[in-house]
Image 1 (cartoon, rainbow, N blue to C red):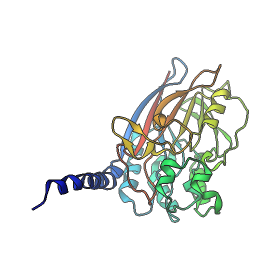
Image 2 (cartoon, one colour; image 1 turned 60 degrees about the vertical axis):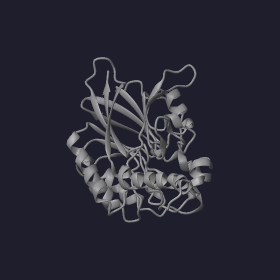
Image 3 (tube, rainbow, N blue to C red; image 1 turned 90 degrees about the vertical axis):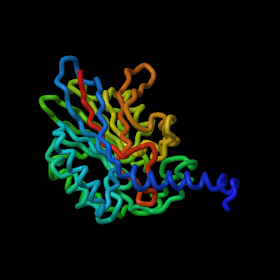
Image 4 (spheres, one colour; image 1 turned 120 degrees about the vertical axis):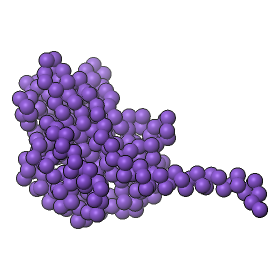
Length: 302
């Protein structure tokens, strides 16, 4: 006969097993398209539809994720912004290009994240939750990049996407002149920030980074960029229902680890910031809880 005390002691383990099964077998594959409206254009402007992709962490055999990404071309966005961490396998570059498919024919811009440079390795989850952020927590600075990021860069740029790795760029999309600034991954401290102001003649100014570190948000807000897009946080990845993210994996407040918010520095107008919770995970931590994998369609309005 099972005693009540034994049942009471086993209940937490049964609940934990249920949560683990849900987060690793269902939610991590429950790909979701978010819709967000951002009033960032000049008054009277026609809306622009921007597809924000981030943190696919794609592996060649992830057929369901590839097919879902391919289906996003049916949205017919005006612009694609890719904020990095596309790959999670040494052979992933062809799979990533195949997954983005017809989206590569849409005007687009991109930056890379740390996982586009370094292949996944096991890391103690406690360091993620309690060990801080940046290169010291990640440890990638101790080895040389081994991922095929140059193949990925060539694949993107050959189809017309603009590389914003520590540089500025410009696109005209549906008659709207957009001036961009981008940085290499701030999580690895690869970012090179300049003091150039945003182009005052552009119809829209956008900053693009992988990781939303405050030094980047502050600099671009002071420079006058109206919209900033980033990823990296996975939205917290393991969230508490009704509370949200426990960590952001950078110095951004965990409460802002996903979604749209405004950021401002003293005496400057606020910038809109959108942080994507991303589509994937490290292969060594293939779980999500209360934080579905996502892409976002932002409708920019006057």
